[in-house]
Amino acid sequence: MPDDTEQTDPTVKTPLPPADYTNCASNCGDDNGVCIPLPQKLDLNENKSNHCIKTPDGECIPLYYPDSPAPLPPDTSPTVGLEKARKLLAEWLGTCLLVMVVVASGITAEQLSDDVGVQLLINSAATVAGLYGLITILGPVSGAHFNPCVSLVDTLFRDMSLADLILYTVCQIGGGIAGSIVANSMYDHVDIFAISTKERYGYHLWVSEIIATCTLLLAIHGCIRTGNEQSVPAVVSMWVGGGYFFTSSSIFANPAVTIGRIFTETFAGIQPQSAAAYIPFQLIGALLGFILVQVFYTKQSSSPHQDDVLYQRTCMLVHRDFFERKTY
Image: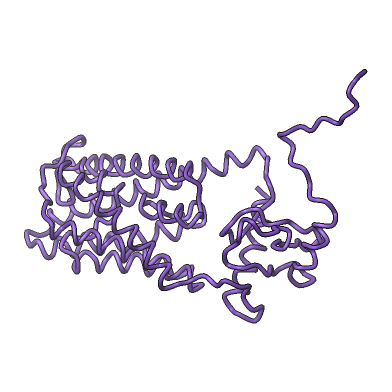
């Protein structure tokens, strides 16, 4: 006799039963669906139907992801791949232009003055301006990481997946190398393809890179965790500009930029051996920054109050992100 038992396709997500949606709706925000009452960190063993977002048309979307301030329903639209490609291109281009600015301004500085202090001042000023512009322009596209250490910390905070970390890092390193080549090609007295022989080696420089990378991550997440995301371009670029002078290594703080600067025999160059020594200490600095962010900006164990400014800001960002994703 034929088996009348209903076969379930394992690839199809089983919808939550009505009872769960009812429970979810009772825990959602106001009638406009703008706010969401959810703890800063979820217990994976909890009933996830207690944590949700509700759209203006009354649909309640359960929260499936831990540590996510902006949960979204599954999206199988073909535009998802295009969105990922846009982000990766933005990371490649942003890192390319950042390294181009650093290297090219260093070459120009050498042409304008023989004073190393003046050269460093020119180099830092150009980097501050370029970094501010790049973060402002490409931040809304990819987050404007331009730095594997930034992407690593985002992964540790579960804001991006391991697969995305790998893709971002590859694009950032590729962009960094391309940036040096582009910068070299703009000057007729510089070899387009070259390997730097400039030695930057010593324990004092490694300590400097730990401090530079740690404080850079602290500056970024300090802005984000206090609801001052709009200040990130200014704070980060100014901190990097200052780092040119208060760190003995002139604040590389970025494995992709460090690798990119191997490919120029100019003011901003670094020999491969020195670069290889820098990168582990940059990663140590990133991990230290990750720890300090958790220490200084602890997540609440209970739902925030609805009259809290940061809570209201989070609610609005969730609401906005949901509809931006739906319109891609």
